[in-house]
Amino acid sequence: MTEERPKCPSCEVNTHVILINTAQKIGTAVGGITGAACCYAGAGSGAVAGATIGSVVPFVGTGIGAIAGGLGGAVAGFFAGAATGNAVGEKIDIHVIGQYRCNRCGEEFEG
Image (cartoon, rainbow, N blue to C red):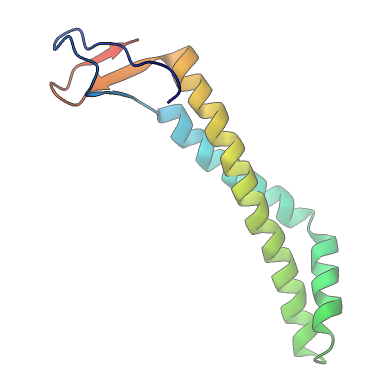
């Protein structure tokens, strides 16, 4: 969290206050799944490259290379999408929702 934490209205301290990051968690999951699906669907060139490299070993190598190329694209897309979704979700949590919780007393409040 890059912003200063607000003080708890009950305890009057900010050392135990955390941002409730629901949108960040949802953004990470949705971004990761979307990124993986999009990159796997568009990973035809990665699968072709993998199949070409794998064709050194006839039959088995081509199939394994194609699968590895497609999965490599999906994994890369998952991490890129998850990072983007995480950043967007964090901004929403901080600037739009603004819900905080004090881990000392359990009070939930808006920042």
